[in-house]
Length: 482
Figure 1 (cartoon, one colour):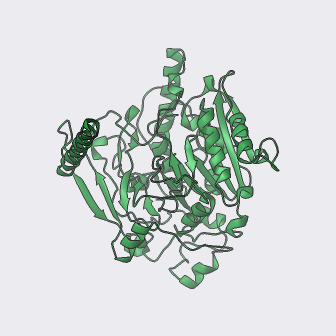
Figure 2 (tube, rainbow, N blue to C red):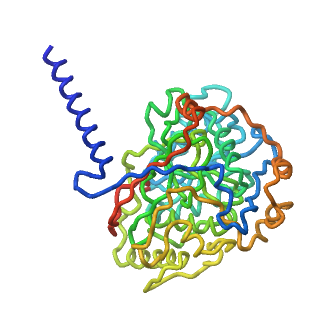
Figure 3 (cartoon, helix red, strand yellow):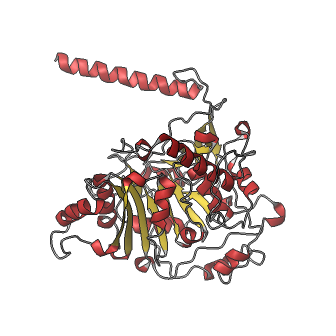
């Protein structure tokens, strides 16, 4: 029939278009003739904890510690929502519905709404009642959900809201952060803890921009089907206010263990709650979007934490990248007030990053939100590729294998982790095993193709693009605005 022939011709044309554009990208050509050469780099995560400094190559980060088996370990999962009740509610629903041990999970939401808006918790209760129609009350798991409702008209950006999210944390062992338009996969709670253990680092934090939600990755019943190419944060560009902004996630092939990185992405974060309590989110960086993730990366790293892109197992959450219904930066605020707040917020961030600035700044509680200088700022700038914070032309990617940097001042970490001493700690397997308490691992699962690649000896590969000329304008990113 003519309709079938027409459909075939359309599909053939589409395939030719895709192949042609892929070929252009491989050749380094895009539609606007800008050059984007692709490179392939071999990674060796097994060596990532060996310092590059030969005089310190015997040192290792502290091994992970669990006070109880996984099925008894508590998790706080926090998120912030800006007038997005429906997607926020489904995020909470899938978190509880697909956790293996939901009784050990506590959820926290900073819900920024106007008076007439739907509330995230109300929509969640409606959905949850349908999933659990009996034996769990009118709103299943309601007692495990902490809500901080705030006036959306007073919202001032991601850091402002995440500051209040941190205040919802109590005595949980692990803390997790996702965007309020995410979906969880089956047994995500076990998968995240197991992948965190695989960092082999008590101070490790899993973080990334998650893949988008689609039927290839996320099964109908919530099963996780991670692709063989997984996201990895390793490059920066110039963002608004000339701050370092994380580039879109690059891709890594055959990831069987977490890979060290210098960058923290707000879409998925998982680690011990002592990271949230020791490194507080600064609410004084009002209106800031570009640069706030880089600042968080720096403060965590200087405070002794190490960042890792998760393996396929830890990519247990997927992200809805469709447009959000409302955005905080569209709020109607008097221009003179907003300009004043923006300047003070930007300069506050510049203080944290050691960047020069002019104009107003708020120094209130700066030390409280500045983390601990267990490692120095200039060390982090070099580690993340920002050779000179005031000269963006010097910024470089860090998409090759990163290596652990020992602490310049380890005393605070040694106090946090009794029994661990950096200078006394050597790569002794018998000593390492003593520090892992109550670990109850299940058999590791790999997607069939990834398992095949692993067993034929293919090492992890990362494919990334770098522009020859950087522009001082924000580009497309996997990071989405609230």
